[in-house]
Length: 417
Image (tube, rainbow, N blue to C red; front, side, top):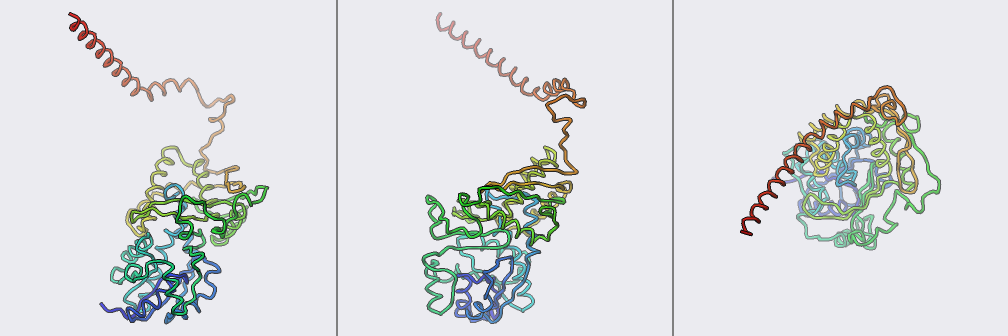
């Protein structure tokens, strides 16, 4: 199938800036640059001019910040999804909404194909392409990194320079960055050596803990059914709330994750993630869950959270399983309403009080002092029944050991004779 028009997921970074002229040179097609505004901030300044200077026929900018938080980030937050114990999935959950925007623009513009700047080594190629397949399988997907002869970011920089294309990186600081309201991810450059500490100049949102203020700050978060609604008693829209938390968390060194993660394609990579506001929200909501959910439900939700995280990381946002797990999360989080106070201090984010009208904590039951609602003698029968399988097993093992000793003694007597 010939390609006359392509919609490119455009970020204004090195890869997508180079892709525009490459598509025109190799496919002879018209390129429409599509930008999903997820809260990249200053990175979007002048992006229209950059796209047109790179050769785009037009640029479409879609402001989906609020939708990104309400329909994607808040869902991941309520699920408790964290990949490999550290990564709060900021890039992973952004890809499906970008793919959806790509498909919408392609259908409106009559494009036969969409394109992305993900490499053949990474996870994003999978996330973009399986999402496009789920939304419009008739669209062709072009992945230049799997086709062209450029093999490194340094070569991409040279390619751009030869065509007079402005790019926001240099060979001295060739970090690959991905930013949205939820986080800022860093990869490449010095970070490719996991034996080396990440240099401080990598961080853009968060101060190193040793340079954070010497006095802590407290924040109070209000949740309704697991959705963040209030900050310090004030009801805020999602974008304003997260921006405020990002500023507070970043100023106190909260939310930096440095990890060697297992990519979907089979290799390990070292990434540094800054997620100040998201970290505060995640830890606060977990405290509220501990107060409002019973033991059996809380423990099962932890299993669901791990599977949910894998699905999002692997790009399977539009899968039937994730949607089914979402229904479970909705049911479980119905009573998770209340207020959590968090203490931010030199990179740490710790709970400093939690309350809820649906709290399952009963001080009359939990107290070490005198009470009239709990008969401690009842524990005897419970322990006898709870430990019954262990008693039965122990009796069987003791009988088997005694029988073995008798057989060994008999064999010894027979040998002596």
